[in-house]
Structure formats: structure tokens, C-alpha cells
Length: 194
Length: 277
Image (cartoon, rainbow over all chains, first blue to last red; front, side, top):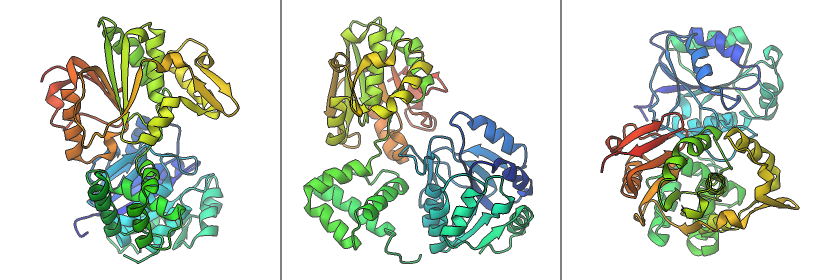
């Protein structure tokens, strides 16, 4: 386990792209974690999304490919129409199985898989959206010792998803945008996650 | 890690996989561990086993449950004309090349419930090639092959399939290929006549013929690197010189040991051509 990096997974749906665009500039060189972004979207928008996000950070941003090894300082985007899972050795698996909550990639699937492998080395953020995806995954992350935070529904363009998570599972923090930015900065400074 | 009744432990999964191998000869040890674990986990919760020991006992002692479990472990999600761009490439670029052969032999490996096999049959029919084609459609699971043989799919998907078909360059009324009956669409016998459905395990079984086209989409993503290489060699051996290999949207020959034997034909659509042995 010690060879695995720390990991931040961000899950978002409707209305979360704007938030990501504000968070990504905080990922500075020497960023000490690996980052996975799971975003619900139309199936044909892959290249565009990586380009959009890439313009907002100096870190390398790439569409996750199967067998990629999670590296510190890299941002991996779950490709459209596949679930993204993580192997015990920190490599990535793409999975074309059933949609979960009408979604592929599903946030729950990646949260849970990351929790199984990363335990307390994992932090998860759930952003704006109109779906119930993410809540169950946060529960697993919490049970396996990871840190969980949800966007304050009042600050979310679509409040349903963060609200659903807060109402159904125990989360560690509810962040407005500036708190979220401060949190990401604190990771950058190498402060303890959980 | 916290001990939690809902979570199968990694050791539990390894025990089960070992049982499946030793007792039944199904080898999942070179599959993606994360994917297999997730699927076992799902069965474990859905079937409400009080403990892992009882789950394991059921698998070891109940052959019928094993059939069900096999279907649950392997991913059997498929659709007709999935990734329309790929089927357009088949229609416009690949099948016209095969048209010059007196007999067209195609292997659809890991065909699951058969939606893509029927899609290819429709293309062959529309290019007036079906009469001189044979499609071998194989899967590790007898139970999904049984569904594939019937060619009966839920009617609710037909709108989506019809749309995919048109996006892939289809110009007919898609509904001419099936008869709707209550909630199901039964595909025409004419399409099925040239398809041979058979069980074949990519992990343990060998090459059984030579083909001009092998289609195997979204199967290799569940295999580890070694098994991917092994299966790709099997495909290479089973292809005629200048035969075509078609993989899934996120699969590649890059970094595999067969890469030098193939030339990419349609990069985005993941089609390669065998240029060496």
C-alpha cells in the first residue's frame, strides 16, 4: 500500500464543470496527489473536456486509459461510456458494464473502487448534479477510512445531488466554493487529508 | 481496513476464484481483479448471503447457481450498432474488401447476447454478402449464447438501435429486420442462417479456424496484460494474412507483443490489419 500515491476523486454532474474550472487552477506543480475526475456527460464529448480542463492547470490532464498507473501530479478523466475502476496495484480498469443511476461513468463505481484500494489515503469530493449518483460511494469511502466532502447545495448550480448525499449518508465536510478551494490548497501544502 | 459485512475482502475473492478454477476449470485469475470483485460483491449483496462462507458453499455445491454466477461475473452488456462510427467503417471500408473473397469467414469473439453479431449480419445482408458469409459467434457463457441464438431482444431498445443503425449509415427501415411481439423484437431467421453460435473460452481454448475478420470489442479491457497478449496472439494465429482485427473503443494493440504484426487501418474505430506472421 505504501507505494500508492494519495488520491483525490472528484465526482460531478449537471452544473459541476464550472466548479472544476475554478478548482483546477489550484492544482499547482509539485501537486502531491493523483486526481481522478468522474463527470456525467454526453458520450461524444471526451476530447473537448480534457482540453477544457487542461487549459486550467499546469498538471497533465488525460483521458484515463485501461492499465494506466495512477501517478502523483496527474489528472485522469473517466472516459465517457465506461466505468472507471482501480486495481490493487493502482492501475486503472475500464468497464463497459451496466449503467449505474443511468450513468456510465458512474461516480459511485469509482468512489467505491477507490475506497477499496486507497482506504485512508483517499479524499472524495461530490459536486453539483441532478442525480443520486455518488452518495452510496461516499458512504463506502467513509467506512473504509477516507475523507468525504460535498459541495454546499446552496452554492451548487443543481443542488439535488449534493443534497441527496448530505441527506442520506454521513459526510465529513460540506464546502462552499471558497472552502473547497481552500481545501484543495491545503492538499497542495501537503497537510494531512483526513 | 475496516471489517464490514457488506464488503467482500480481497482474500475472499481470491478464494472464490480459486474454487472456480480448481473445481470448474474457469480461470478468472488473469481478469481485472477490481472488475471481478465488484461483480462478486454485487451478487453477494443482491442474493443476501449471511456470510462469505455460505456464499462460497453455494458456489461449490450448486451447479445451477454456478451457471448464474458465471453470467453475473462476466460483463454481458451490449447493444446493436454500438459506436455507430465503427459499423460505418465496417460497411464502407472493411466489408467491401472482404467482398472479393469467395467465402467470408468472421469470428465474433465474446459475443455475449449477440446484438453486435446481428448488427454485422445486417451489414452483410445489405451489401449482398451474407449468402457467402459464415459468422462464428462465441462466448464463454452457454446461457448468453442461448439468448443470442434466439435473437430476441427487448422492444424498448429498438428506438436506440434504430438510431444507431441510421448513424452507422443504414438506409433501410430498421424495423424490417424484426417482428415485434409484446415487449420483444424477434430478429429475422434470414440473419441467423449464417451465424454459428458456440461456446469458446478465450482463456483456455485454441484457435479453431482461419478468418478474414475478427471482432472482439470490450472484452480485452477485463483482462490483465499477460492474458491480453495471449488472446491477441490467438487472434493473430486465427487471422489470414491481410485479415482484419476490430477491438473496442478503448482497446489498443499499442504496447502489446503482437503490435509489430499489425498495421492500424482505422485509428479511431480501432481496426487493424494483419501484415506479418
